[in-house]
Length: 86
Image (cartoon, rainbow, N blue to C red; front, side):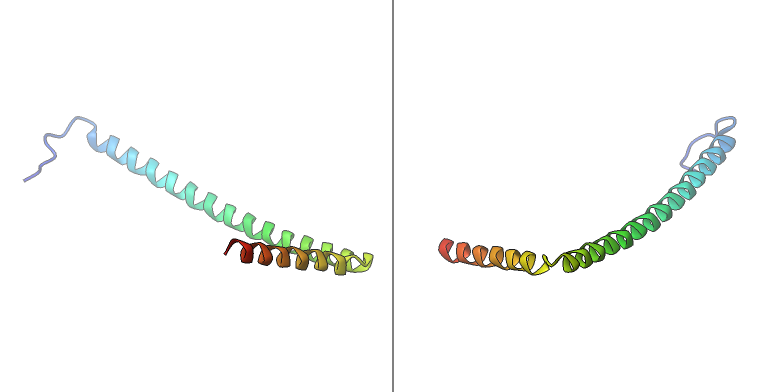
């Protein structure tokens, strides 16, 4: 027994149109998702290249050691602060 009730005139056509529209939206969404994933991967590679270039420039400029020392000083300060809080 069909529990959907009586069929309205043009109901099948409306359902088919809605299904087609949904299918098109789903395809567009999948294409957009693939494009966004590709662009995010591309951006990630660019960021990695930029980080490498900045590191190379810092080495050439002779400031890498001072930056490393600053990072180590911050880590030491954080550890000292944690010990005081405990």
